[in-house]
Length: 305
Image 1 (cartoon, rainbow, N blue to C red):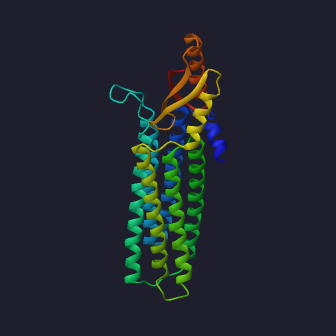
Image 2: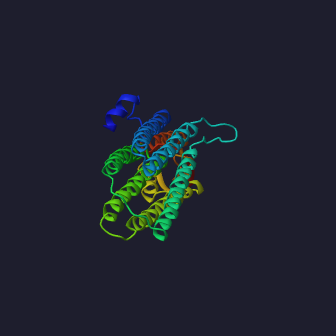
Image 3: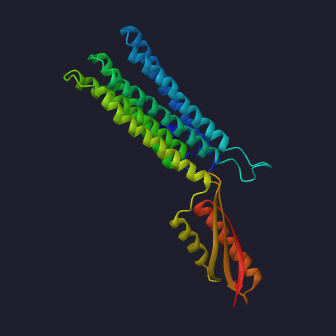
């Protein structure tokens, strides 16, 4: 279904290296998230008011707050696509990494809140009342959140977006949390132990770990991560696969955001080679690296005997 939606609403959707297309993916992901969370909010709020369930009403407002993650996705896509300026000559691509970091904080906060509530349920256990309507509503919301996880994962992988991957994990955490509520409610109807509190404790630990891991990955990118060894090998190979290039050294790669990678390398050429021919060959190599890897490459010539 998500592939159909992408084809329908994103022009030139296959050109994932194009900045405008990347922005369209981010905006579409955010809009779908807002629609899904609004639907869940309205449904749960209406049913919660009808059956007078504070649990359902609370979960409805939780879905309303989840829209904040979708808004962050849209803002990240918009801000990261801003053109370079005097203060940011390499563009604003790292806004996407910042957006991913903010989403990780949201995930972490949800985990801490669930941890606090779970401790309260263990210390002050309450009788769990089985409610079929509640179970059906929560099960339906799980299906919606699973779809949100799947489309965010797919789109994040398609355009290599860390903020979409973070949003996907946020949706998956909701699946875990809601699944824990259902399981705790069902089991709690047969035993006197605070099963829902214990389940919440386990799930909160998983959510906190996910938030920490997402934040770590985002900070890693913001600080300047070491380039992929396969990327280093491929760049060297593209440069060396030319008759006048004798060797390479001092490869440097700078990541200014998805699709905004620059690199420089020193190419060793014979000191008796024709400078015009070498210059033409290097221009072709830089163009080939750009076409294949999407990297703006600068090649310096070093003469060797």
